[in-house]
Length: 189
Image (cartoon, rainbow, N blue to C red):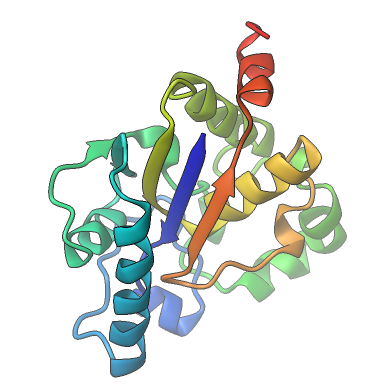
């Protein structure tokens, strides 16, 4: 399975460094010239990768707005793609989270429960991959924590390393997951 994932365009909260999580924050329009150039570069890449078996977005408007900017109006909305629920840390900076959890956030996030448990968050990622495992090529408009967790999961088999990674807004990530790994997740392999 080829997974192409674009983290949503910047929001005002991104610009101020606030954790958004489940908050339904809109993209910050108008977009600056640098962002518009990056969108065009990503579109050129996507044109070469198309067609996609399915184009997904989370249930949060910032991903749907990003998809629309990219010219995708016909989306499959799946809440499994929603951003990590940061609970009481939503609307606060990452520094506040780091002050509270420091090394646990960086090295052992699976031990944490914020607005949701990180074990549950990892389960959402596995459920998504299992649910759509028979698709060959997909495009996801998603979120930063979800993208980092997916990268960690594919590389390490869990999300423990997710917070040692960075995924900028509007970043296009291209991944390939071999069917044998997907089938082992679903118990069919």
